Image 1 (cartoon, one colour):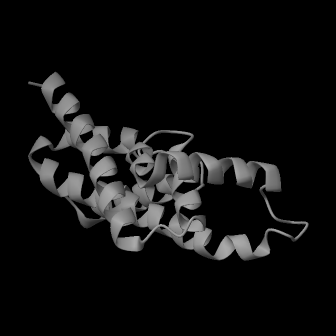
Image 2 (cartoon, one colour):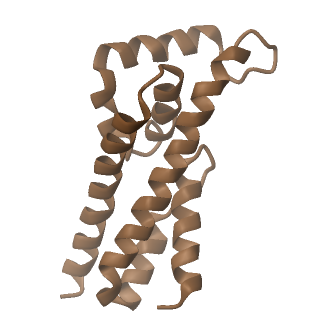
Length: 145
């Protein structure tokens, strides 16, 4: 497996975890179909890229709320308060849903806004995102034998 493949997967997984509209699952499946023996390395690269992208969201959340009174702020006070209430209700365990499309990326941003400790954030998000890629790899490799 060439370095460019791993780098491309890392960048796709990283970007997919941010608020950018990217997807890494199709790339992982395609590469796994080409080289099933590389499953552990591909899983590590995809998981680490995705977790690092989520950490960027967390970091942005840590810094974003101080600008909530500005006109250009992308979230209305009502939506911000609603997100805060949901996060307080379900707590840090809601980060187990960080792997999900649509809600996962904003959830990691809200965790930063809510002041979620980085160590706990990384532990839960790594578990969730690593499990998603593991299941995807298992399903992919199960289909080819």
